[in-house]
Length: 206
Image (cartoon, helix red, strand yellow):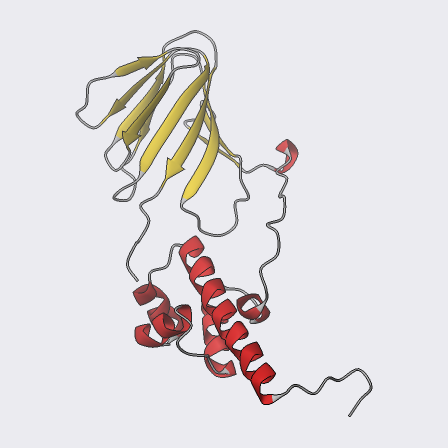
């Protein structure tokens, strides 16, 4: 035995294995929900039964390396991410120069992502810029999507579906269901700036 190796007793080995099993289940559930995957969806993508995924997440089953590899591949992560102890969440900076900016209507409506653009998430944060007197029409988002807007500069009219229009001044906020067609209208002769938090429906199935 090498000098740096430690021989574990049967009880210690069992305790270590149980700890890894529990950690794997916690990591899988956390990463899966962050990706926005239900158990059914992940089972289909990974080729692992829904029952097995459920047992892994609850710590009732320890996956083989083959199953672990299938799950990791489906989630786009290394296997180690599923068994590693969770450390502190890193701080992720999003410099303005590297922000993802989406423009429509000949640049009269701009959306800047204020979060890392990679991967799926339940909540997104944007800066919106609307040119003077411009109206931007938005299609309905997926079912259950909610938008929360606050106006930082200008006066803006918001219409969602068949609801009555809402006119917002600087500092005013509104929240509405965005799974219907909606629009943003800048009512002034200067650029309007808004901040938007979009929340997608969380799949609570287990």
